[in-house]
Length: 146
Length: 421
Image 1 (cartoon, rainbow over the protein chains, first blue to last red):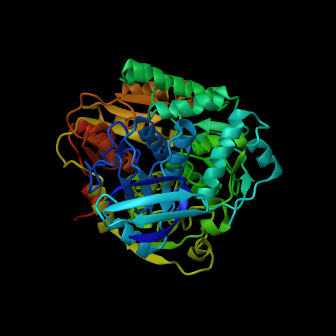
Image 2 (cartoon, helix red, strand yellow; image 1 turned 90 degrees about the vertical axis):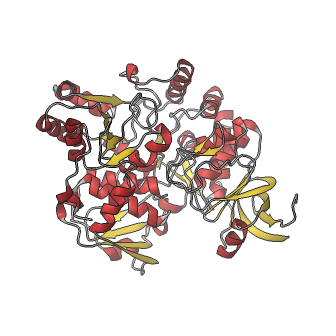
Image 3 (cartoon, rainbow over the protein chains, first blue to last red; image 1 turned 60 degrees about the vertical axis):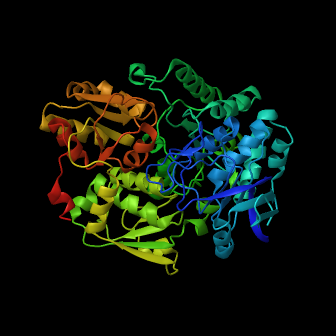
């Protein structure tokens, strides 16, 4: 087990299997909120399902409509359990913040700004995220079932 | 590093403006903390992107704010919706979704915003001035406001844009600040012939490469012809904001904060440098195309919404190429269309076989239906998003290539313009 210090972008706690994306994904146009499937034609992981996973991606990308897609995915229940970024991204964070305002369900979003920490998280099979304003951690858990 | 709120901010948070304003302030504060802001600043206007229907969450948010008494505090324009309210027959949404989409558009008007329904608010008469602090959403509008107008906005998205409009405040970070506007990535354009370097598709291909390379760093581009027109800069920015998270592109000799490379870099050396030549532009053109040069089923122009100049050019080309063999659509803002309706140019476009779409866009809502063959477009943004959104294959080219292809019914390439592979 390894504890990584992160920056909190949206509060909450979650643990689960990780899904590390090889390239940033624009949630709008790239994620189908009705199914949780990656639909971006240009993305190498097209077809992957984000639902319930700890989604690890370097940064957000593209359209500002991504906040709505994330909030809608939370409403429908297809959203990732948490999102771990390398570069802080407000568009992703706001989708999660608004989802909590509207639906009361927390989807933590954190940034691992240390390159080595982010690299470690993107290689992990399972992750746990605890995020509160001021303090956030990502726990890499090698043991199956956490 | 903590966020310091003004007395007025705290009063709003405490419910002084009513529960809707307090909710907007709560979201703004959480977002400002996530963005690392230490204070908020006043904004003079806003452009909201939340009126495109992405599902029930879109509607829940704004209807909650309206019901709780929130109204915009600054002049506010609206981005495209999912419906063409002027030409409703064009959009083939199922009735339930169409009704929800209409309800969403109405809710933003009830919030006090102007029903402009355009992704190109910079084409409206009253636009932000150099140095003006605004809160704009819609990635292409953001990059245009920052780069071409020299106004200052962060990359706002749905929800936060409305929270800024309702509170008149925005986090004082990033592209709002001198430091955040300095270029970090220097892009040198070398050996690109002037006709390609001035064409909107050539600049869109360049923007596509910029977005890929920059992520959300601010790039400065050197080596392009000077005094590029707004249509070209619009294409460049829209492409960069689709393939990357770019919110500002300095173009030496064309954008107001880039009289020189040094000025755009703020007197510091760049973190990275990149060189782009004609071969890279051609590769970008091919990367933006998911189909080859065979038959096409339709042409889609005007993403972002076409300017009056672009519509004039499309009309001129359409008259030149003769009758069109496939459906040809152009998206534009209703205020631009009103000027063309007034003097007969809109009628001339329709007579030339071109369908004008307003209030929405052909890549966000079902307009191009029953088209099996690839769709040709002069927009890198359309080419980037349409395959995922609509399930179509695309061919990317210049406006002239698109119109000639529309007449021929198959993709026509101006190989002299793009150079040999």
